[in-house]
Each structure stands twice: as C-alpha cells, then as structure tokens.
Image 1: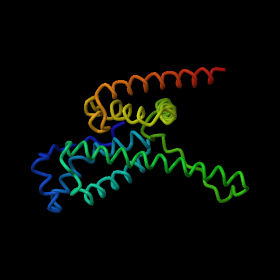
Image 2: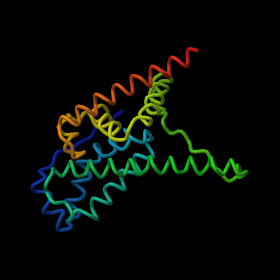
Image 3: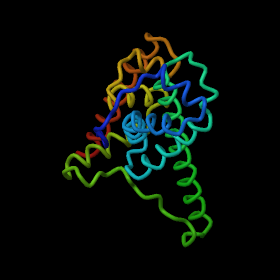
Length: 200
C-alpha cells in the first residue's frame, strides 16, 4: 500500500555536487523528492506506518551523514533504496530478537517483565478482510528466504522493474528473475498450506 503519493523529480547530476558541499536546501530537495519511495519501501518490509516513518527519518539521516561515500557507480536513487532496504531488514531482525527475549523471559518466570511485541501489520484504513489478507501475506513473506523477500517486496510493493531490483540488490538480471520465481513458488506453497490447515 502506498503511504504517500507526492513525488518530485530532481536532476541527480545537479543535486549531488550540492549535497557533497553540505547544501541544506539541496538536502531538503532530496528528502522531498525521495521520501515517498523510501517510506513505501520501508512500509513494504515492516508493514507498520509508524515504524516506516521512523525508518524513513533514519534513512535520510544516514544519507546526509554518508553522502561523501556515494561513489556514483549507481544512481543516487538506487543508493538510497539500498540504505532503506538495509534499515528495514535491521528493524525486522531487531523485532525477532525482541520476540525471542520476551519468550525466554516467560520461560524463566519473568512474564511481568516480558512485553508482547505488538502486531502493527494491520492498517486501520483497510476493510477487515483486506487487513486479514495483508496480515497473512506479511506472515508468509517473513517465512521465505531474505533475498526472495527483498526482491518480491521491491518488485510487487514498490513496482520496480527486475532490472531496477537487480541494481539495488547488486545481482544480475537472471538472478533476480530466479529469486522472483522461487519467491512466488514459496509463497504459493505456504499460502496453500495455511488455508488448507484453516479449513481442517
């Protein structure tokens, strides 16, 4: 689901030299131009509007602090996408660590200390049935290999072409095509098993 619709195009060749000089206005232009893509990319992974907004801020802070490391071997937008994907995956791993910690605390009798990690996958603007489908899909996505999840999220949720996904992931086009094929097969199998078990 797209959280923002606004998007302004920028001339990267003109913008990058200004960013390298620490131009604040250029940075504001960068945020205005790419915040939609970053927010929606993060949302596609964490499926929480609040967390996606926090991650978006983190992405642009890192972009601002490390712009001098941008070598120009890829498009600026591709570089920013890579940061957004990495931040999102770090957040997912953090969630898993928190869930494991809460589980182990409960095992040793610290239920009062352990906090249940909230399920933020439901969007209040969707109908109940759509929310349930989105939640189930997110759970299935979390079960497939990481590279498959990245490729599927960038292509299906962000609408990027296979070639763009390949640039972001640093893979060949055939490798991305193979990842997408395996991701679809994995999701189809897991969804089939899920719904079959629900009917039993």
